[in-house]
Amino acid sequence: MSDPSRAVLAIHGGAGTILKASMTPERQDAYHQGLRTALAAGHDVLAAGGSALDAVTAAVMALEDDPLFNAGRGAVFTSAGENEMDAAVMDGRDRRAGAVAGICGPRHPILAARAVMERTEHVLMAGEGARRFCRDAGLEHMDPSWFRTDARWDALQKELERRRLALPDDGDQARKHGTVGAVACDAAGNLAAATSTGGMTGKTPGRIGDSPVIGAGTWADNATCAVSGTGHGEFFIRYAAGHEIDARMRWAGQDLAQAADGVVLDLLGPIGGSGGLIAVDAQGNVALPFNCEGMYRGVVGADGRLRTAIHREEFRVG
Image 1 (cartoon, rainbow, N blue to C red):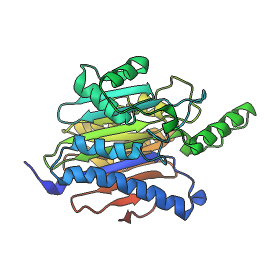
Image 2: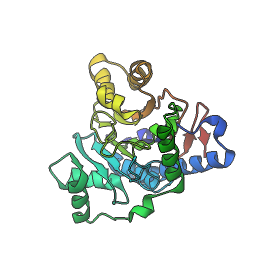
Image 3: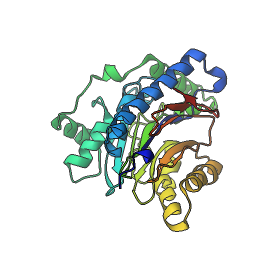
Image 4: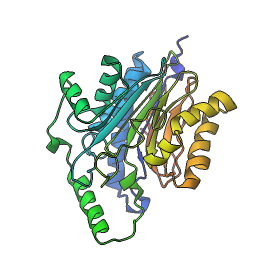
């Protein structure tokens, strides 16, 4: 039964934010504006009676176009000085899913993931085969220079210099956790999730994180929840973070908040799995837990009010 009041969209622009002490008011405003733009894009879909799947796609596309976030334009660099992007999308109605890994070329990696879901019998495609598929599918492509930003290149040089000098890890979570994602519940109670990332600054070429791994960084099932994660991907993969929340709801009878908090705060946090996630259920409830300094995040419900936050603070309402 359709119920417009439960339609809701939540987004994240990555956990491991810039340290609060280093965040200028101007940069803070820019991040809030980027989050609002993405929220508005997804909300427009839901407000028009569109599907959760279309809403999360629209929201992530907006974040991929914003160079402030580590996905699409503004993706970080591998240790070899190249961009390798991953993305996934999942439809909670029937667990259809599509993902791509280790690609550079499509302007919107999330559209590449959706094309895998809708135009092939596969779930995950990677490397050269995925790039060829994207071209054959007619997806918009950009020159590698379009994805490059000076800030990401400088971050790579600093990381390579740290390694060259064998200096200790500075614990910069922002360098390790850049991802964007969206989850939504539409008026019909259908759920969807989408995640896109450029990975970790200075990562080994070929490394793939949790974002395109169904059940780890991306998950959706109408019976339980939709999840998009952001954090130290290896931990999210090892503990199947998205599916673990599903299992706790399905088999332990936990509600969304209990399950999401339990995974992020009690399971991943103590073992070094720094990060966070966004999650929604079919009643329109939202959970936004994180165990690091901050997580770029936002929520918009049927009232159309755009709520955004970065660190542990009250939402800014726009």
